[in-house]
Amino acid sequence: MKYVAAGAVLFIFGLMLPIEGIPRLLLFLAAYALAGGEVVLRALRNISRGQIFDENFLMTVATIGAFAIGEYPEGVAVMLFYQVGEYFQDLAVNKSRRSIASLMDIRPDYANLIEGEGSRRVEPQTISIGEDILIKPGERVPLDGIITSGSSSMDTAALTGESLPRDVTVGDSVLGGFVNRQGLLKVKVSKPYGESTVSRILQLVEDAGARKAPTESFITRFAKVYTPAVVFTALFLAVLPPLFIEGASFYDWVYRALIFLVVSCPCALVISIPLGFFGGIGGASRNGILVKGGNYLEALNYMDTIVLDKTGTLTEGKFKVSEIYTNGRLTKEELLRVAAIAEAHSSHPIALSILEAYGKPVENGSDPGHKEHAGLGIETTVDGANVLIGNDALFNKRGILMEGGNSDSTVVNIAVDGKYEGHITVEDRIKSNAGKAISELRSMGVSQVIMLTGDNKNTTERVAAELGIDKVYYELLPQDKVGIVEELMENSSNGKKLAFAGDGINDAPVLARADIGIAMGAMGSDAAIEAADVVLMTDDLEKLPQALRIARKTRRIVWQNIAFALGVKGIVLLLGAGGLATMWEAVFADVGVAIIAVLNSTRAMK
Image 1 (cartoon, rainbow, N blue to C red):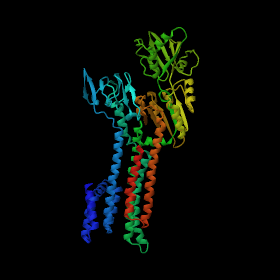
Image 2: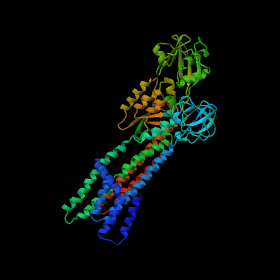
Image 3: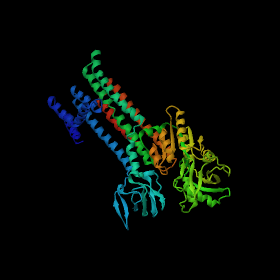
Image 4: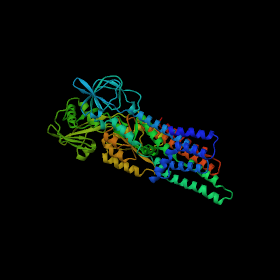
């Protein structure tokens, strides 16, 4: 900026000093070289690369043209204002980037690795799974892990956007990026740094800017056609009227053409629109909603159908055994023991609830080569007997008759050596805010809410009735979910988008297939988070309507910029062509509009 400042000083001298002729030309040329030399060099460099029609070319042609017709002060003034405008645009853009970076300032600088009786400060990248780290009060959690000693209150705002602290104790999971507010914690690392939550969030935010929204792509294509069009229009404006209109002077029409060139610069659109989407992504991340690109943020505006997984999405995903039914050959305790041994190798929430209800160390009585039937159940060997444990579909498939009647809860059937022995009923509570979230989505124009689940008909219909869901599909296998989503997408209206929200490993294929895949980040599996386009870091369903509000606000701001920039430019172009606008109005229509549009874009972050 120092050269621009020096050019401004010479420009003021040129206006004030009573000099004419060659000295005056040389003084303004020196001012021009200092203020606009960088722009001219950029234009020449881009021309040598085949990139002719850009804002540098427009500014160079317009200002050199002003010198050619003797308007030295205006030629320098245009370049000065253009450079000052670029400087303020850069300030606004850098400020927005810093704001977003500060929102995501969660990268840990170090970790306290426990060694013997003490600890040593090391880089988080050097720590392996299973090693123990110490987290002192006020420190940021460097890696994901499980608390093995101590209790505390965690500030989770950087990841989840939640202002309320989260109390944690032995056995609870903590994520990289949380801040330990008070107690001394000992944590066993569960993921290496590269796979930790903090590392993946940073990567998602960094990658998000690379995925352009359709509006961004359109503006980029528009600018490539628009810029050469206005250059040739300006050329015709300078040459044709003096040839065909009697009394028209080349001086007047060349001046009008130069104004036309300055006004036509598409900077406001090219800079402010991507910045608007970038700000929207940053604003969403601040609220615990990770959007993996501007294209997905824009797609949310057209969401017409939302398909929801049940367990862990609409419900808490924390099952509890509510009833044990036995036909009498085994006691309830024996039936529970068989189920616990069979489920010992599973991490499914239902399996964990059975193990919790059993409450004892599981004997090594299960066959390590047991077979899992995806979405149906498990077949294994316990104490030398063949055990089948699963849902009604699995038992119907094997022709095993069941007893005990229908239940509105989830039922896990158990058979030993092909004979039905009883079932265990487990219940999963509906999330307290699920109904409110669905109601908000409807009020925002989402016309269809659909639920997919592998659970039984009775449980599914009870949940659907309580939440007011339009349509349900139950007793589904993972591949069935993909087929249903594809069918729904084929039948959807043109331009409308279908979103799927889920959290499990078995939801990953559907998340990848839907127009918009939304994963529950706190309880969701790594595969689901990886496949999704949007991640809700708190598993809070009310984040869904909030994501829609952010998407709509961002789109509103982007289109405000488009309308404002094209509107002002259109008016000044017409005035310039009619001889009613000077270079000063042209400078405002270019630089002023760009600055206002950029400042408006930063509103998307709030």
